Image 1: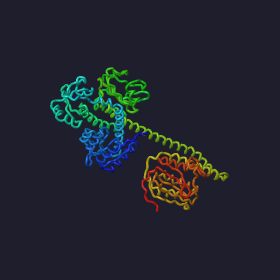
Image 2: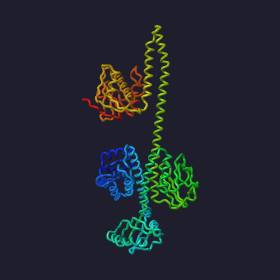
Image 3: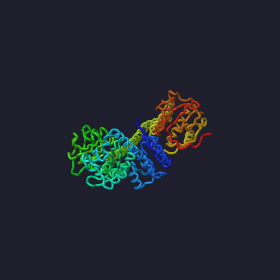
Image 4: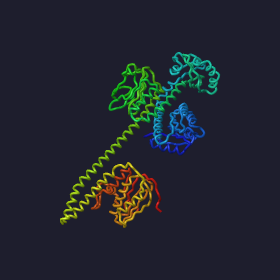
Length: 624
């Protein structure tokens, strides 16, 4: 079952929010949009309902978009948040990313922006859900990746994990038994002793920023959390703020790369942007993109050293490599030390690798000559970049298929036209001969069977015209115009029916379609009505009750239910003089417009032809 993606759109212009919501829901039927007029209403919705992504304007009464973002981050630190605003500047974008925005998108004219916004929403929600799933599975490992230590009541380290020791430049065993003061400069020690520790003893917990001191004498700003246990021990977690700042800068740069990817015209451009972003934004030295072709992954782009040959140009999918594993499993693989794996790298100097799939399109891979070169942030950003590339490549493939389909339809229409012309020529040639012979026979006075010959020739002429009409009217309608249905119906009625019949236009309305083909529809239906109901038939034309199209109804004897599908078949007729193409042409014209046509009973017991899926331009007036 497809999982719904619930989007909260906060904008102080309700009309724009609702319109944007409709466009997003049209882009992907998984998306469901709820709207709020300001940050306060948005916080209320978040508190009561499950939301997968927030899209917010910047310039709003009360809290602006960044202030709203900060409020959201307090309670929902991992919820995707896109700032979608008409007030665009580098300062706003930088502030948004620094405050924790997932992305920043400026409002523009036209509807293409909603396709971009929908792609961003889908990408970030997919990434967030994948991260949440991985988080649930690897809670213990993720916790160990944080800098964590435990201190006794005297302030000496009882336990230090590797991440904590690495942050300060020590070995974990060297810190155990040491006092926490060795990790802070003098002014920071004073603050910890006089402000932070008293607060922890009073409340049990403290969180904020402190200045750490590394073994080499370098100081750095750290996010720091302390919690006191029942035994007066302290659990300490730290994170280097510099890493978070660099992540924010990388996300801002990836936003620009995503915009470039969305504007790419070829797959080659996508690969080039992908590799360039990996080099200059993610700071990966050795990068390659492989594309699935047949039973192998084929090298499409790379940024290896000029003097290296360390990459496979073609990798069969049945071979066991990190690229084929990631592609088959559809999951990212990070290898901290390639020498610990049985897989032989293309270059023996490679020590670590990160490989992430680009859906079923291929893989993105980075390698390094240093062990443990790729951390959790590298993985997150690589997956995000690969997701942007996937959306761009999917868009290009859809556009390519559309172009091919359009070209094929044009070729089919051309062949159909040529066929109709050939059939017309081949039939008209003997018809012209027969007509000439008939004229000579009449001049010579040979009248035997001439009436039958003339009737047969007339029927051949009718069959040819109907065959041509059927062939041409089935071609897809590409150019549409506003057509006044009442005017067309009345014109056709005057040409086909004598004064004994009557036409009643119940509703005056207009549609978008091909005027000439619509005339053919009404002429054929008028002839059908006269043929089955007599010259004094009454035909009514109006709009369907649900405004999904229009109807044409007569007061004749109707069409039995068991014959209603058959009447649209080629050659179906109940008249000795009919060709059986009239209603078939009506159905072909409806199909060419993308409409549906079916037969039912009219209010008077006759036949009623209902056309649905029709684009009504306007209903001019209702009949009184």
